[in-house]
Length: 231
Image (cartoon, rainbow, N blue to C red):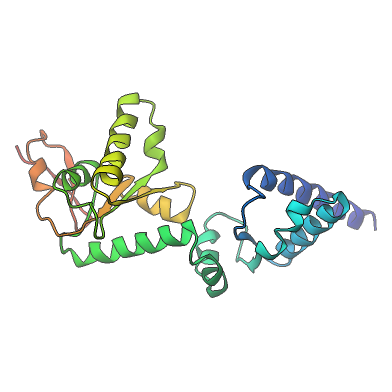
């Protein structure tokens, strides 16, 4: 019984730490889905702990979130299981209008266009900036996908470069801008493409070849390969 008691105390301490962390990260005045995922029954037990704690404390704001909690099973507690969880039919049904679901759909759509290689999907800093200069990211379906990691660059000039691009696409051209978190699966996929990509309103060809005067730098092409730019 001593071992069981220690396990219970350890689990309660873990739940308390997790709850405190959760409450620091969410705004209880907003009504949004809160996903709890784990192997076994840990997520369900944490939800019960959360609601019991809120009841004892008379925390009406937290209790009001009761119907927003979604408990689902995951194969493990590691980050890589997040994508598996987010693809489940139950979660997708609840999250279909949320930011993450929108970003996932956009990344899926971008990858589909990239495989078609029809000139409407480009990635890489120079290619995307060229597309924006040509007015291909404006109203009518233009989407700029950019990783939040780019805005954390130490060089102020680099950060300003991306702020200017975002302002141009959103405020001048009227296109859609999505800043993806590098902590989420969709953001990690974008980081794998250099942190920036675009879905164009009309096809453009040979944007990578227009970088041919870059002194032999590597440039991204729409088929996902890197080629040496030619002088």
